[in-house]
Image (cartoon, rainbow, N blue to C red; front, side, top):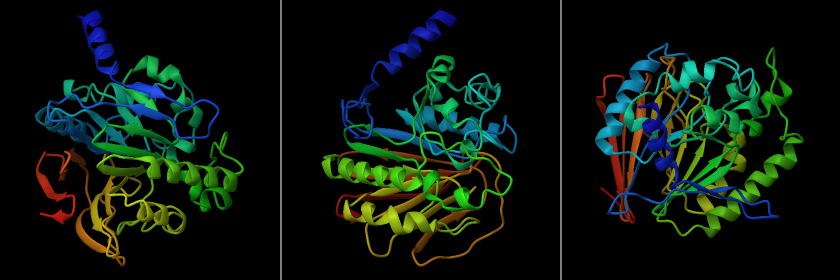
Length: 327
């Protein structure tokens, strides 16, 4: 049985190929061609979860499995803060299995988990999460700092947002951040922005979706991330990005930009939540839920449809758009 399961997983991941252009600074690209006859792509998005099943993490995981089966998802978008409170201690840290492998056990979730780091991940051994050792332990785990997933109808641009936040550098308090491969900050950020801008300009996908850990716009505890508002947001608007998906705030949110088609989507309800804070910003709040849950997204050549779910699998909010018109 174990051999059959391993063979099945290997078959799933044959569709995922890494293409890194030689001798360039371009973002690594992962090719994930659609498997459905109509070319559509379906995904789940979740973040801020790694608590060994506690704080309703297991309940969220159960409903992700149920919705994932109904939608026949292609992969999971994992928006960071994967292991609380201080990331992993190394590649042999049992938290990887106790918070990931042993929690997300549903058959429908045995798909690639495209993963970025959150600020809590940087407080531990950040390089451990990028290591192929973890991929060998659980072949779903695909974690890099910044990269692109090409699903043909859509391209997902994953951005490493933690280094953007200045207070992690200047006011770390009692926390220690693993800045290996990141420092000096200014050079790293400039290269990420340059490479992202180039990748977005080259994209021919119907849908352009950028994924980061930190919110650009949020009405919850952390609020807007000002560094991203100043540095990242202009690039997204200039390249007509459709969706920005993030975590960091432990809630579910949908905010519409008032001066562009961009939609801000927070899916940080993977475990501990209920912060009790709501502070409106200048954009339009479509939906806010201060509890645990996750998000789904279905993309076709003409339409995108998203939904947010709670720990009981109830649809709390759904919304859709087509190219050129909302519906």
